[in-house]
Amino acid sequence: MLNRRHLRVKVLQSLYAYHISENKEVKPFEKRLLESVDEVYEMYIWLLALLLEVADYVVVDAEDRANKHLPTENDLNANTKLHSNRFLKLLRDHPGYQNAAKKYKVAWSFDPEVSRTIFNLLRSSEEYQAYLNSTDTSLASEKEIIKYIYKKVIRVTPSVEQNFEEKFINWPVDKEVLEAMLAKTFSNFKSEVVSENNLAQISPAWHEDREFILDLFNRTIAFDGQYQQYITEKTKNWDADRIAIIDVLLMKMAITELVHFPSIPVKVTMNEYIEIAKEFSTPKSNLFINGILDKILADLKEAGKIRKTGRGLIE
Image (cartoon, rainbow, N blue to C red; front, top):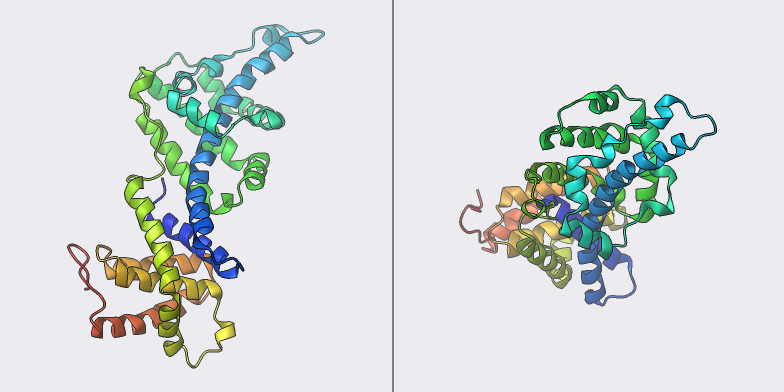
């Protein structure tokens, strides 16, 4: 699921796109911001569909083996247990999954080699053979082989990575979220009754998170000139052209949070943007941003512009 750090990164990406664009109409960038969040859920549905595709390929493989010119006894009696996996059956019949798959027009048929490749890697594993030989068909047990398929096969198969990279521009940034969403799905699917199971959500409280990212995006743009002045005053000894755009945007976002989001503690805001800088900017950006924000924060406190409430006390 998307946490606040992931959401801040989404806002950063949208602000960067807005900054480098000649079009300064905000609405299209707002729309794209929300779409970038929805794309994470779309990736999740594509991943679930791939698990089902691999299970379906088991039947295709069994038919191909049985139709060989000189099939062996093993070919004629291929084990298709995975196709009837109880977890996958619940997923396949789940209305939420069906509706999402239809909405996103999910179909791995455009590249049938992906499921073939995954199955061939899976078939040779000891874990898969143990699953085929096991008599334990409990839902908990059935989920274990699906976890294995994802963690040990799908996640390390280059063709899967390539397909997601080609389809989703933010795949390198967002793929870690899918792991949490898939884990949540395994946790949620506890019942043999389809309607009692739930897919993972994009965030624990999307209504609040949606408001958060739109406010953060819009307020950062609305106060851009003012916050640029704050930064300029504290970087007089720096060549402006040498300060990375991402660093400037991160500092403006942080100032926006400090001033306009009373429920977010100061320390949380400071730590979050320093951590994001480590991942998305230059090697020493986190130290630079930390130093400049500390100075700006001191001025904002002195001017009485930091007003935190509840758990979000300044110190």
